[in-house]
Amino acid sequence: MLSALFAISWDPNIRGIIVVLCMFLTLCGGTYLVIGTNLGARLGILVSVAALFGWLATMGAIWMVYGIGLKGREPTWKPANPISIIRDGTYLNSAEVIDVPIKVAAGSSPAEVAATVKKQLEAEKWVRLDDADPRRGQAAASADDIIQNKAKEFAAGEYLTLSVYDRGGERSPKINESLDFLAFFHKPHYALVEFAPLLPQRAEPGRAPAKPVIDSSQPHRYLLMIRDLGSKRQPAIFITIGSSLIFGILCWLLHRRDRFVLANATGELNSAKV
Image 1 (cartoon, rainbow, N blue to C red):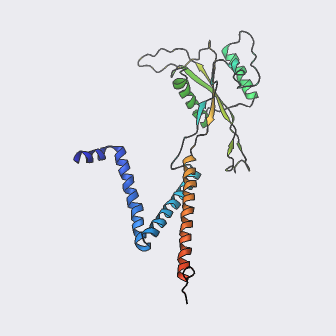
Image 2: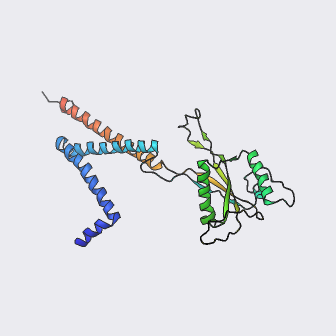
Image 3: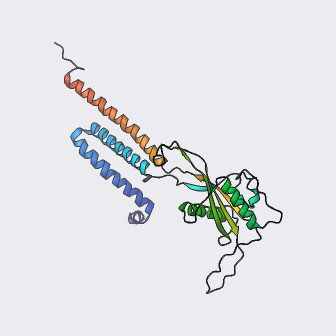
């Protein structure tokens, strides 16, 4: 018995389950005990359960509006299919990133090819995000995870993120720019991350790391990502809808019972025979 108590005290999973059960029995059970002593066992449980699901519907609506409480998957960037990494800017047209092929002179350096690609991207309404834009930092962080862990294109410190381009993601319908809470439809949102390999640097003990130098002999790479909107408010929506339905049914049952009680009290159901 003592060992079981020690296990409950130290195991966070078992302890969490017991805390939740005690809370439920104390709050819900205590509420039912008070209501049941005044209204009776059957009516007390009906009123208590209706109040519980009414509270759940209210909390679910608050979670749904503010995006708090029980949440689903957060929005994130994912590699686009079927092609995500383009290892040369001249292949962006083949990967359907841009509509017009990149035309450069024979013997052009990778930097010149990258400059031509930049002009074409901006001409086709790809927006280059400023270095201080939070969206750039989020897209670059997601790109680092894809490049290093999923695609294993480079390891950390072997490349440098140069630019992040953004396109799409418009929402509709909108009343105006500031009133868009009815904009439930989204167009695909894409991000194109430009990165370049670095020259190997020799690390010397006791000295600051050398400034990264781009390898001018290798072409710049491009990572195409698509925005996954996630399901942040989905659990709250399900809780709100389900709890509201159960709350409505329980309220109808209470109303139906009140009608029967009123009919019995007025003698409409069991009229006395003269």
